[in-house]
Each structure stands twice: as C-alpha cells, then as structure tokens.
Image 1 (tube, rainbow, N blue to C red):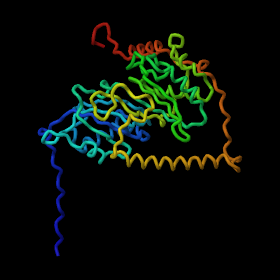
Image 2: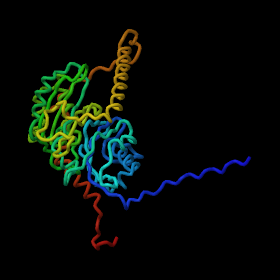
Image 3: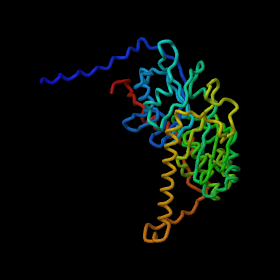
Image 4: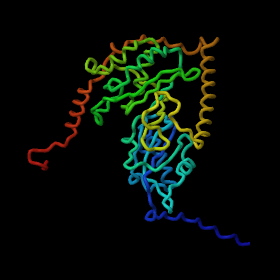
Length: 366
C-alpha cells in the first residue's frame, strides 16, 4: 500500500501592515529584576534586559511593526538586578479594525516570561511621555533587619528631604548630566516584617545609583558606625565636593514601587502618598499568581539558607573555614575621596579633545 505524500507545511501569511492603525498607549508593568541587566534595551545576545523581553513579546504578537517606529518612552530606568512593582512605558500599539484597543495585558502576559507582567493599559493622554510626564518616583529598599537603630536611620534620612545636590550620593555620569540637584519629597524608615526593614523614598527624579547610595549611608548610621549628621555633611557639597569611597547597598533589595502621573487611571497622581505608603501599587489578578509562586520559592530558599548558615556555625564547624575578622570601620569623612565633579568634567573634556580628528594645516589632506 502506497504511503501518503507528506503534507506541505502551511507558510505563515505575511502581515499587511499597510492596513494597520495605531494609537499611543501607556502600560504599567512589574518585574523581578534578578535575571536582567536592567530595564533599558541592550543587545539581547550580550545581556538580557526587561525591554528586550518586552519588544520580543510586542513583535511576536504583532502589536508593533518594529522597535524604531513605535514612539517608545520609559519612566524609571532601573539598573541590573533592581525590581519594579509599578514602572511605566508608553508606545504606539496596533488597534483592532474597528479602532478599539486590544486587551494588551492579557495578550502580552501570554508570551512574556513569568517574571515580567503587564498590570494595566490605557490610551495615553495628549503629549504623554513616560519619562517627562512623570510627577515623581517612589522607591522602597528592603534590608535584613539585624537590630539596626531605625530611629537614628529615620533622623539621618530626614536630611534628604528637600532639594539638594546629591553628587555624594550617586555615581556621577558626567557625560550625560551636569546638574546633580534633585528634589526628595518624603522618606521613611520602618520595620517591615519579621527579619526585614524598609527604607522608602519618594522624589521627583533620581540619579544613577542614588537610592542605593542613600541606603548604604543610612545602614552605616543604623549600625552605629556613623552619626545621623553624616547625611547633612555629605549634602554640603561646598565643604565636601568629593565623594568618599563607600560600597553601594545591594541591588537585590531595591524596588521601584510606583510612579505618579496626571490623567493615567491606574497611576497615583498629585500629591504623592507618603513614602512607604502601601496604597501606591494597583493590584492586578493577572500578575498575582506568578509573583506569589516566586514569593513562596524565595521563602523556601531563605529557610534553606538559614539552615545551612546555622549548621556552619554549630558544633563540629570548628574544622571548617575560619571566620573572617570584622574589618575596622573607617569613618566616611576620613576615607579616600573620589575626583570632584569639576575634575571629572575636565578629564572628560581632555578625553574628547584626544579623540577629536586632527586636522592638518592643509585642510583634509594628510
């Protein structure tokens, strides 16, 4: 008996973009940043980012034609390992033939990795830009609570409120920024839950690594290694124009909690809630299950790590690795200093002069 000829594979039909119509939308998203080199796009082959996963999903679902033409903007540019409970993007998305929008969260969440969720979508207000239309950003930094003096940390954190030059609390990006003044609206330090405390800060905008620098200094105060007056001393850039060397707070504890906008139905507006307010984020059932499953896994992992740590410290552990002696704390104001802003700007200008093409006396002839 003759075998049937193999069936030809049906070729995917080319999508006719000439018939597509678009409108500008704002999307609210949440993500666990552990597996990503930040939000902003980089070459996916080199380092995965949240935006790379987003654009892969947008192209796969044919909600955009390409990355270059979709009028994309982002709000909080979170760094490697940093998380978001409420970040925002805006872009032009394809509409239904009748001119209505699709259920964008359901479509995108069906193809996105489980650690990235679209929480909500709505048409963007006229002239909306996710970065420049933002009224404020609210961050929360969670740290293991080991008896730190939270009242002293709150006293120190209160000096951040207002408009200050934060050059001593950031990584200075002199190629792109010359003004390091930023306005902090509110701060709070509190016990969050068993074994965890929280530093929350709301501000109009933030510099590169600013929140992690703020948290690092506050933790030194909380451990009794520095006084609360250290913050005001570092904010006085006239007296202290050069940042002392200190380590950043670990990125894994930082969450962009939410951002404020006018006329976005699922975003908080003005005035902003107090820092640490639980009413900032909008709960969304489409995001609940994946994140809750991750929470349970992390709780189990935490219990395993505690068990291993207790075992290493218990009887019979003397023959193992020696416990390193705690280093003597050197007060920040006595430490080595980074170059000043002016020195960094001069070095950048010298670098640009070296890289500029050298013209001979006879014009373009060499």
